[in-house]
Length: 169
Figure 1 (tube, helix red, strand yellow):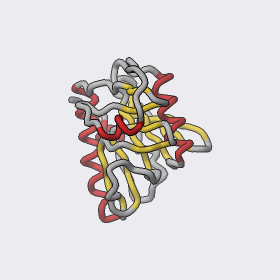
Figure 2 (cartoon, rainbow, N blue to C red; figure 1 turned 60 degrees about the vertical axis):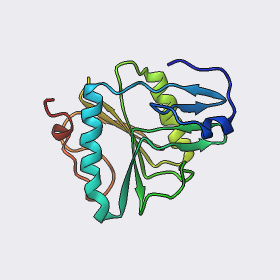
Figure 3 (cartoon, one colour; figure 1 turned 90 degrees about the vertical axis):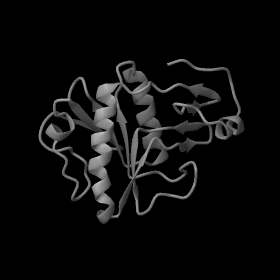
């Protein structure tokens, strides 16, 4: 990922990027553009999670989160308790942040995002890897991987078979 020259938070927040960028300690960080697999899995997850409205959870896709004073992240999908916040940039930790790994993402970059979400107070971070056909769930207690069965979400009534997420495309 390329980093641009230093920019102010004010300029970052006043600018719309296509696709959106993250802001890390004064630098704009490009996000990898979704490939076919990434986009399909992103859509499948978001669609499946939309059904949780009756369970008191709402879905937000590619919304900025202010994870610290100098860092803004843009997860692929978030689950929030209750209704979606009215604010443009979320300042309250969502219940879950989901990142779908793109071909050009490095594990170092993904781990930095995961660490930012957990430090912000997000209870659960899901890292969905289309190539490994695996979902890793990160919490403050550690991480675990699943390659079959149900997504280990830790959320009652959230039963998503991994076979549905990774079905042939």
